[in-house]
Figure 1 (tube, rainbow, N blue to C red):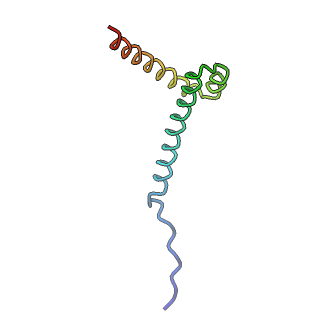
Figure 2 (tube, rainbow, N blue to C red):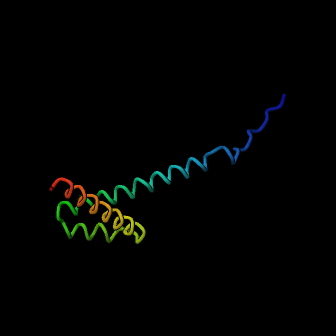
Figure 3 (cartoon, rainbow, N blue to C red):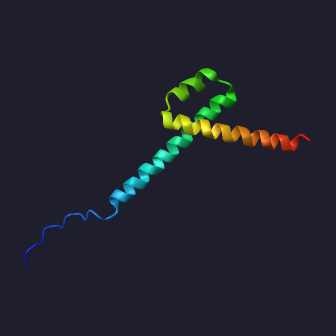
Length: 85
């Protein structure tokens, strides 16, 4: 009986998809953390650190932050209007 060499890994074993999923999750977490950091600096009124935080973002992320800030502002104004008759 002769020993068989090990079979090469199957390229369709799901490793590529798992890596893609992990990288997407990291991207999502990174966007959330960048938004959270910018929000924290804005809430503290720390314009200098806020500017530095925003400067570090890509144009795409800046657009996401701006859109989220507009939505947050509108929703907060609506909530306030509902509380003040």
